[in-house]
Length: 80
Image (cartoon, rainbow, N blue to C red; front, side):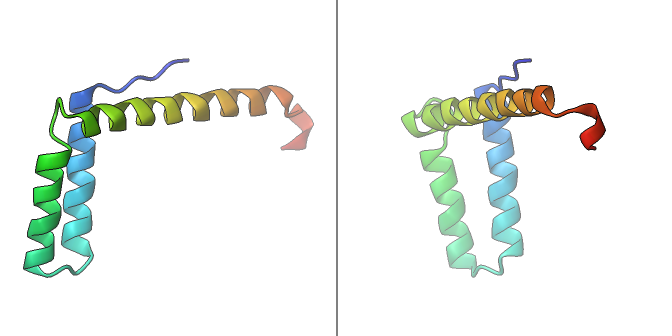
């Protein structure tokens, strides 16, 4: 099985996560604005940071899926 996220999908997920952190962490208005500015400048589509983030996220997901597939193959049915 292969799962690959696009730049747009991960950018949207990243935006939702950052907004949730900013809202629920009890940050001051100044800190929340700084966090959102960082997100919009560093993690903009097409930047090197965003490209690296997408590549690493897809690699991590692929590695985790491969590990889970191996674990299921080795696990005997009666061990549940």
